[in-house]
Image (cartoon, rainbow, N blue to C red; front, side, top):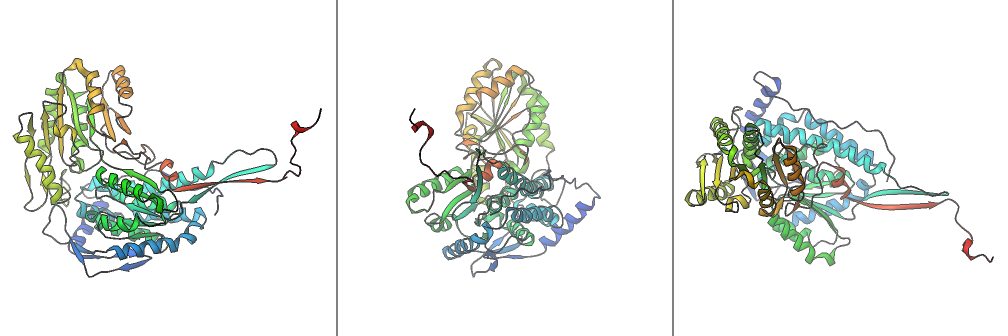
Length: 543
């Protein structure tokens, strides 16, 4: 295992393409979307470098056009999970003993493939399969994922670079071993970049992985897997299976070689996983690493000194980009009475100008939510508020799933800061607002801190510096990513390491060296060049 430090290309954030009318990237992407929409892609599992087909297939359709078929995937069962674990363990020795710079080169190549020849395909697959507009897809599926690959290589070299001090006649060194066993990556639908990072970060550190993507992200996951293989990820290092979560969990969490889970998803699912692992802890060879990013009920607090237009813009973008299906999305806002009329007017104007529809129309700002189950859950909250005397639907509130799962961006004004939609995660285009008396700013900060069990992202808007400092201090544990005069979404790899605490996860900060360290089991090596030959110490000499 090589710990030699080579100079690697400096990590820089991948530039975001504009896709303006007449641009070559827009023409290429349009052609790719047209081609994919005309095909029916057959997507197998990938286990030990082999494509695995089954007799049980499930249809894939775009959320914005659910009657159109874009392909099918092959559903696996417990036997395929076992095969994937066996493949990961078989590939473990050679991959973990490969010099780290060789592993680095694989993922640097993956970044260049993604940002180059695979850019249009990756964007098209994310736009079609997950109903993201071109900008949301570009910043996620291409730029952020390429950033993860490149910055993780840089973070790995920094980890290896830090070595302990040594006393005279000795040499101390730190070796970063992969975990002993395999890692399970369980990934969500809403960010293609997360789906790519969760299996690749442990793999970069020498681990081998069983990866189960969300069923609603399989279409773009197949492109990620193609990039991995094209970049040179060896067979068995990352194995992609399509099974139910409980079916995979029953095999994985009872296996003696289970070494860790890299998870993004719901708090309820992660709680269940944690409990199962705890119940099975006596079975494992080592204590597993549990790294999870879960839910959020993210806030925006405006101080009376805030700029009303800036607040409204942050809410328009932060609450409704990608239909609010971000764990960091602005979901609850606290606006002072003196600013509310102005903020509301700006917000109404913004939402009235939103276009909603198919991702192929690049003028649409809003597209469909991910599936019918999500549609029904979100509209349930909206319908509840429509009938409740303690809240009013003041903007939006309409929905239609006849062709696609479309929900109009909706703003609910609550008369109680503890109202249902102010507290519960909705994960859709719904923003709840509470208007407070200006003099109760400090009281509102306490309410913000105590309202939700989550602590992922949050924002304060103020031009009064004392108010900024007060909010920053009082909301210390309310958000793992805290924003001052900015929306609570859009963390950039290498700039804002992402993660929250409380019921929002283990806060291991994706996009930083802290996350990569979780996939390493360090070994300290001390070498004594001149070993002592007498057990006696100087203090033992007679005077």
